[in-house]
Image (cartoon, rainbow, N blue to C red; front, side):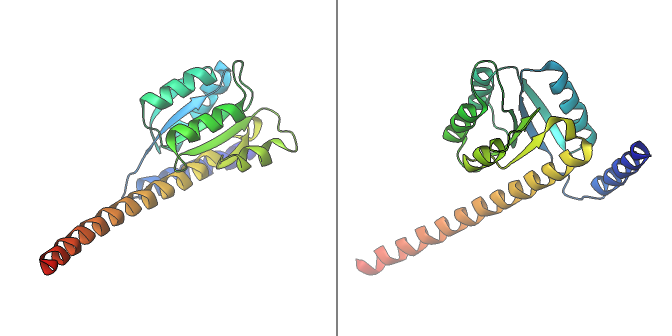
Length: 177
């Protein structure tokens, strides 16, 4: 019965997405050492129909290098990696990409303090791997898209204000001479 309900919800989401006139999508980086978990995440992400591209990294170091080379809207970051801890990778990603990048911590088993520490260090949210499904990723990606739209609007407003400031400065220079 739960499977039927989930399938119905997915169909409803697909209809909602098709009616979305903006057709915005996100580019995702998955940093997770477990091949099966990455495959599951990719399947669920594709089922949201909100993802334009998925890039994978098996280690923290590879993930950091890919993050330096490309631009991503969202990073799904496993907390337990073989080469670097998730907290260390999180801090490096924020150092490279700034505060505007959406980083979601993912873990197989969350301690009581892990989510609090990751969010305190700059992660946007955290997800437990066994609880991740298309519906949950849909919710997360809608938040990422909203943030992407707000960032674009902010950048456009900043450009416009910069232009206005330049015009005002030129007028003041003419008045001063």
